[in-house]
Image (cartoon, rainbow, N blue to C red; front, top):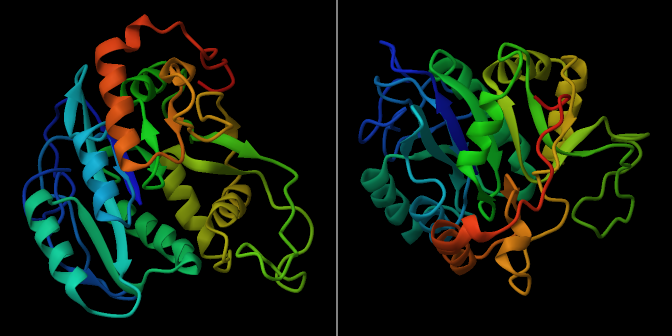
Amino acid sequence: DAVLARPRRRTASKGCGSIAKPRCHALRAGVRTSPNSGETLRFSSGRRVDALLVRALHLDRREAIRNTWAKEQLLEGRAVRRVFLLGLPEGGPGPLDALVRDESRRHGDILQWAFQESFFNVTLKELLFWRWFQAECSGSALYVLKGDDDVFVDVRRVLGFLGRRRDPGEPLYVGRVFIHTYPVRTWWNKYYIPPSLFSGAYPPYMGGGGYLMSRETVHLLLGASAAVPLFPIDDAYVGMCAKLANVSARHHPGFMPFEFASSRHPCAYWGALVLHRLKPDEQYLLWAFYRTRGRTCPEALPGPSSADA
């Protein structure tokens, strides 16, 4: 997983804790935490964070994200930081462990827990991230963009959207909204959910690779999670917690309803906040195009409606 956070203006702050190098700022490299342990990775003290970017399982994808849209930087006085969320590799300890430790020492942006990576553990990772964020970053990071490790984010547009919010204190949960969606009942499908586990339609939730939320929303979701049993489909679980917390799911057209396709002209995506399903080489190509020729593209998407801001 990857997280984007947006710090406030420069104010003295206790910051978000400590890791290999200052970043939150940074994460304590190579530390593994048990889901039930009080020990955690933390950001180091320093500048407040406006936006925190989170995700990723694969090294090549993480490198592409670091070298393109998720470079840690100040944009128009807003600080942007990234975090990658990992469990342990399938199959137990092995050569990948050393690679991850080295990667964490070099970049200071990895948060790793002591449970095995798997499709059905993504929900657990989501919950543990909320706990970590609440304990270590809620005093400094204002927003979180949660995304898969194959998304492309136009960070400048995201910050522009956040800057236009009429009520910054109102809980924010925005992305591509799925409503009236029912569980998959085909038993061989990886999203299969038996009727005994969940009946009826899911509450509104965000899908499509990424969504944006405020720190107030993280606080409310974490509080609601105490009454919501873990569920195998992470997006639906977030929607369940949001419903219980009375947090409205808001749609934004900038979270694209279709996946990235290299056959389309890059201008087809100009105006999007989040694109999904990019390979690492496509991340680099789209980033290069946006930086050099993006301004030649017409605005392809409508701006956020008043309901979104």
